Length: 371
Image 1 (cartoon, helix red, strand yellow):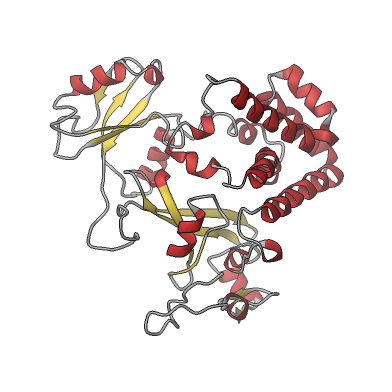
Image 2 (cartoon, rainbow, N blue to C red):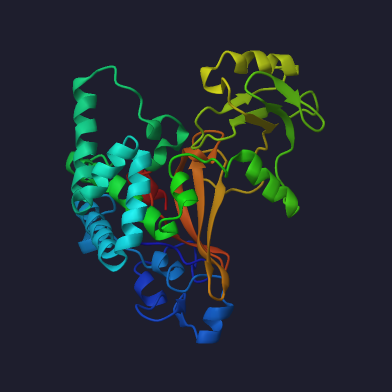
């Protein structure tokens, strides 16, 4: 693809085809400069992963999320599945049983799927195609949890019907093998593919508070039946309030309360939450809604300034390293879950170096033009 290198861009024109010249095909590099072993140890980034993203290109000269791209990704996931099964059979079987027990209807379903382990990739694909057929036949089908909130961006299939069919079969397989790569047969890790029993909103707030991080001020808490003041309380300040269910995800169940319009007192918010069945018996956090500054232009024309930095780290033998830093922007709503463009950030130079068109089907045609 084409992208602009910030340090070499003259007169506002993009530099085409620089990816192959600026990032070497082999060895440890940063923007074309080879790294020594000491530099790799002292680097902020994971040597084998960070740079791979900067030179990512669609396979065989195709477009991202085309049929060929989906087939290529499926082949990678399929190969990784059987590689794990052959090289770590006992760990992979334990992982599969625990994972399948959660996702396939309990112990009986988990046992059945594990017995049929070598055929799992094809069974997963078949189940997804069956769900697709059911949606066509049954008009009032239950809403898919993946598409229930603004985070549906990450699960939206490609526009091509054939590519979307491959996407449907690929999605559960890449989640399956991705989970195994991340945490093996660890029971806690596997549980968190189904339900965040530990990493809920309060857990993250506590971690951020412990290191003195800046975060929106919490003003209230919902205990499943009533709202209680926290800190300065709901009535404090002039900001709007956002309410998020403690163990929810992808923006599902979020409420935004406009001060002076949707509420003036704690009781106004309580009345609204009491009528929402998603909040029955659930805990929730109510915090000030912090809006982005308008002084820095970080979105394309026509979009809000809402954005987020998605920073992924890994623990390595030489310490914690950064695997990726992604900027999500061009949002259509108040949350970065509604992002329609993404960019890869080089942490060494603190510049945007490439679009992340490979990451999710987010209005890909328009996003590529904007990028």
